Image 1: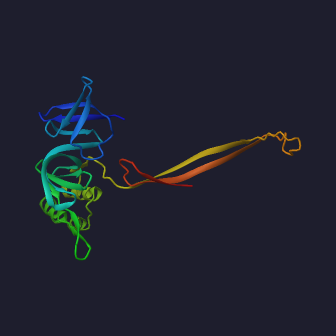
Image 2: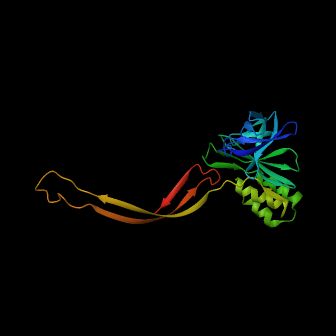
Length: 250
């Protein structure tokens, strides 16, 4: 299906049109728009666009970032990308970048540069145990001390947070303070949808035979109606895109 799309060009102009999907699955390197003013399809990339999005659904912004590769902090690449805006804050905003290897989260302070929140996992070759590097907690504590100081509850929440959009979206909103943040993209998190329905199974049974001695020969048709009620739940591992659903039904 198509959604109303806007693109902010590199020159600062905003154009409107249609995109042939509800939302990109990952951070795209380019976006095609069917312009509403001339019915032409035009493509924009990080060289020609500052931002694009669908109002009330999602927004991507262009940044040049030094981004980790494959979930490790030792290999990094300086590149131009479109980051997905999760939380727009008066002081701190939260954005994300997702590719086939991993998801990286970024903070931006008052329209400044995008800084990656550092998190990586590795395996100790000697013990085989998992080693986590959670420097993002120190980074968030520093932001909290700057914009929302002396809040022990916020510090505790940072310490127990996970490197997930739904966890860090709440923390960034708290760093900005009440009424100073807007959640642009709902956090991707599993969800449940309950359903109930009713139907009826109608069955007609008839018999025909050629043997004169067949006792059922000439038996009348039999009609039956079996009412049915269905109840259950759909479990989404990603309730935003709903590309995979596990259904329980009775």
